[in-house]
Length: 324
Image (cartoon, rainbow, N blue to C red; front, side, top):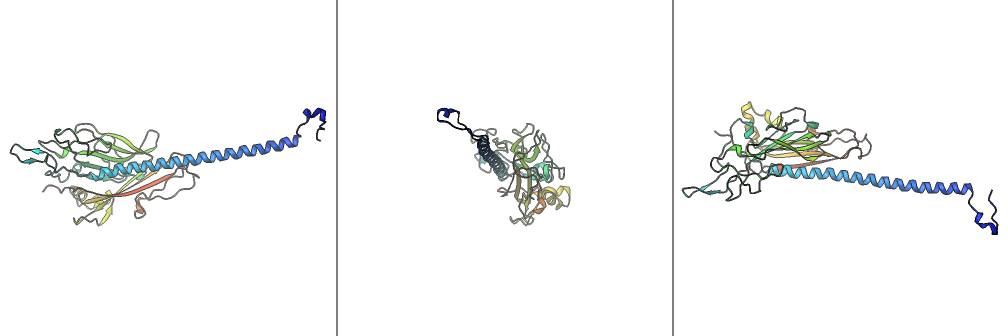
């Protein structure tokens, strides 16, 4: 019952137990609603940040790979200096011919579903269980030296996959060995997160090193535009295994690689763990686009957000014919 309230004893007036319980319940509902709004906003912010991070990784990786592929087979044809007889000298690979059957002399080469060693010049072998079936890609090209700076000071126009400027070949005896190296492949970091790696050699005598370029890249796939008749227009797209299968012998593999005039590259990037929603919601992804269903990727139901990127690069420089 309600406590009587007398004018002279007004300070003793108060709420009943029922009123107090109702007020507490209303306050609790307001607090719970505020907490739910805060947690929802925080989860949405985290999801947006993770999605943006995945897209940033894709954009950066695509920019690096695209820039390096465009350099494939580059040779400096500009005159470097005057010879003793007054004629101009081109200290580049302009007149060098690649050997017929040495794979290291190819400017573009890759392997399908390949694991790559981090400290050697190998681009891996086919079907060696690449991370999520990822491919490898190796690009070689000549650097360019600064005018008047000798043959060891790069001018900064040609860089490898780590952004290290590459000098041009020796002026006296230019060699195919003077070319820069850039490899791309997917490997797992120490915490098992997949990353796109760059393998490079910063100087002509140094050891090879591998460094991560973009975190969260879990798929890297490549197909090649094949120009069989040499008219400059590709007839079909082939992966590395299909391309090499066209060669009648091991010695003829290099000939087939030199018929590549473009590359189509696809990547899949994933977010951090547990922010993508229900773990049962998965979608079949096509890193190279729906026109290449054989390169599909079914991600695990791990609650991660995923983004794909696909782009095509046509080769600017001539892939040299083997020496006669």
